Length: 325
Image (spheres, rainbow, N blue to C red):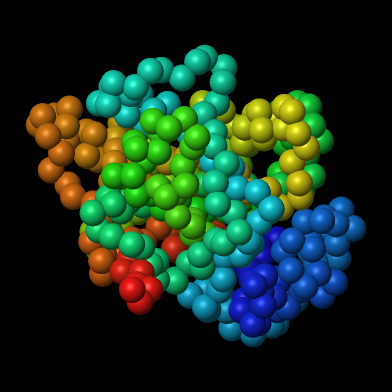
């Protein structure tokens, strides 16, 4: 089942079912929003799956992914991990960071009351902040009980999504040194237009990981196509880590962290910071700058046969409107 949220004048939008080729859509009956569906997944999901069947026969209306909101425009909780060893090892080497303790995933809790739509302009305060994109995969769960094992948590993964976790790199080190986590360095994330149930990935949903490449382009030029499978921890283990001392509410979104591979020189990267780190190792200094206002980033993951999956994130960075003095 594929799901999207279209604007209807409310903050949460109107939930729609989407055909597998992302060509057609129809309003979901019985659940007005994705949050409502997640709150009663067992009762509502089978009903919506039957409603989706006519779309494959040409029913519904044309679907334009660029008009969609984020599938879950606001969530009760956004958790982001750093689950790709190659990315973490590279950052540790270049910046002299301490290795993460073994067996303990890196994870933080970020802004969740706003997820940007896939084609929205992204207003940010200043180019001097080091504007960076971060291509990720993510999952959305229903209620995960406190103390759930990884196997138990896996049964609560209801949807898989594609995310751009925007970062302001110049601000991140300042906030990290406080020990209180990120606020200014982490603006709202973006989501691709369509959330999918894990079965839509077929064999590419493997060990609670997305076994597919995430294609990233910056200003129309290829930037990376790293594979999503080489996570140290699958999404099931990450959810179990998060649920150690608290239940996770239905509608929790959890990200993988920047998709990264050990052969980054071949496959490229999913964020500018990683490319800059590679340049620092190879040339002694970073050569690639961060994003400028007017720049565009595009991210898309398809099945290996070319079938569209989440649709594309395609966004432009713009200066935030200044309040009058």
